[in-house]
Length: 294
Image 1 (cartoon, helix red, strand yellow):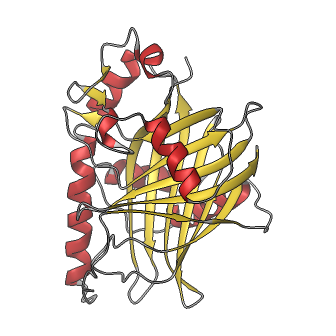
Image 2 (cartoon, one colour):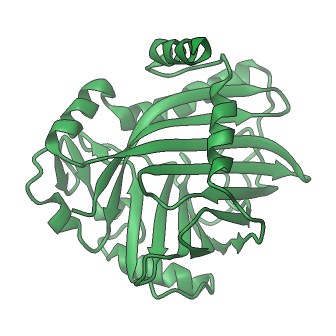
């Protein structure tokens, strides 16, 4: 089986004009888009289609009309003028839970026949029904740093301006992603994703359903809850400019050398804060106290 579970947490930290931080536990699926039927065969808790305890639907990504995700990836690579053989394509995504899903961001790892990364596509979705694909060239088996101008309106508290820096490691035993948004050359927002690989089987899926019930519903609820907290802090709203519902742009591969520790260091910095939110607030604080005691 090439599919796997990744379980961990995400931390978001707004740096200006007022600091705001939150953390949530989550899990995602890593799927080979050409082997879905093979990898899901035998699983009772995860099925292909729109409904199930957990499910994966082809219409949640790419064209969203039933056409293959591979054809969408190849088209987006061509649109962005990113050369790739695309021998293997892996999708990192939330599954549907009881038929519902919202993916703020999904990643598609594009590899050659030797397993080296050729590109990473960041498929970003907004709660306003728009989506944008940041197509970033990549090279090699190690951590990648990629740069992109912000193109999609995703928050009423941030205008469509500035740039993103993506630091991503190919998924192995661990999976790390950090995103730093900057405006005028100064960082004003960071997000990290740190997860560990687990085997994909019914027992672990059931355990995750019990420990993080209705996770995908909570993703949307958390977006609106944190927006309310920002509003109550007095952070001004930004109007949404007209833009296409579907967009694609090319990112750049940075020549700056990235080490595997960059992601862990940023994640540790975020975890050191005391402003913790989400369904596992008390458990997370207990772990933090334990680590400080050690």
